Image (tube, rainbow, N blue to C red; front, side, top):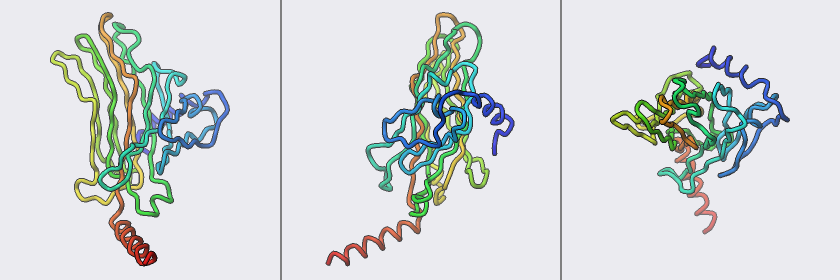
Amino acid sequence: MRFTQQAVFMSVAVAFVGGAAQASWTLGNGDTLSFTELFAAGSDRTVFIDDKKFVFESFTSAHFDLEGISLIGFISLNGNGSGYRNVGFDLTGGFGDTLPGDQTIAEANLQYTVEITESAYAQGVRLCDVRATFNGDVEGTGAYARVDETIFDLDTNTYLGQLSVYDFWGPPRDTKLNDYIDFCADGHEGYRAFEINKDIKFFAPNENSFSSASFVRQEFSQIPAPGAIALLGLAGLVGRRARR
């Protein structure tokens, strides 16, 4: 596992959260789960959203309490070019530098895995690309809000890439609220699972400045493996023959 020492620290940080634990949750589009429930003592921190399984391995922050963060299921209304819907989640809460001018960066780190459920994987569904979005907003010289995430192929422990979304006040101001990587652009047939380390930072260096965001979104799209396309075509042919 990547980030081994950091992950151990973060697991300790959430190990003593109170409340009744649940083995796993299934969220539909717009369904909400509090981080307090997700990281309750004894929870295996597993969430199913459509055909994706998320395991939230660790969360740590000296600035953001679990009670103030919620995870909301996201399933896109429209399909992508391969006919599948994007699946992911929103993190919502009062993210930001709540003590502007104290020269301290308000930071949080989340490490988790996402994988295709066994049944969907058996049907040929594969992970392909990752998209990050947030609504960071800042004001004041030197203020910034940013989310950086590092993506690995979980099965081979291979580094795949990094996404960054941000709003830097500058001057000059530099803003990128969406970032995207297609890991199948080079002809790769897709992946079963990713591991992601997400780092969230807000900094307002002066008392009259601010840095905040109310949501951070993560989306994953998918494609059918080449063999699955052939199977789908065969199934369609059989269906047409059966209807004659």
